[in-house]
Length: 235
Image (cartoon, rainbow, N blue to C red; front, side, top):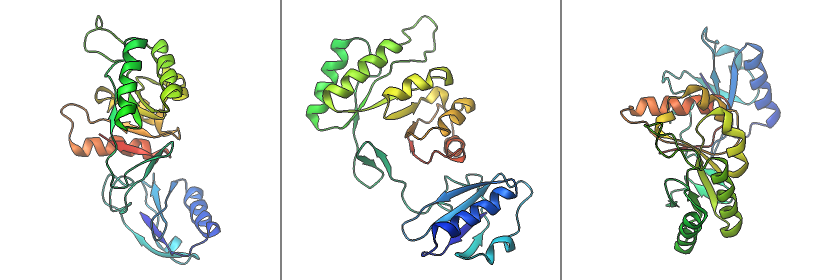
């Protein structure tokens, strides 16, 4: 269910709605909009009667959401999502270019690439330090040394870093360097990893898995949003 707040609803009124949702054992997801705020209820397997909210100050309507993507859908969030990546806005209608190599292989390679990316005017640099591969014998990335090189690039060229996080165990280390966490195609349905990045407050670039439907991509994004991280970029 989606609770629509009046355009002049106060923070206290929105907080009161959230408390009532949480007191019933559900999760409140505040969705700020261009003209008004909405509050989406997730986890309400038994349902909550709209009448519990319709009389509350600041509430103008309650709308049933039938879409399984309760937070990702336009039904719940009709306006564009704007993601701020250290001063670069993604989602405002402009074109954002992310440049860089698939994998970080050496200092010379990554610095040459960063120099070209920066000279082109791009603000975001991609490079993989941890690389999931089909074969266990293939190059798996420079790992922590690769993160160090990306951090050097970030400082030298003032580029925002987009790099893949492969598992929950390395998430903390990757987050120290990354401005955007990339979930690769192979991990699009790694639900433990989706939940882990959902608990962080850093933008996530979610890549569509091979053979996955759009609905499966949207539901993967739903995992992230449902845990509080609203900064999701679909790829």
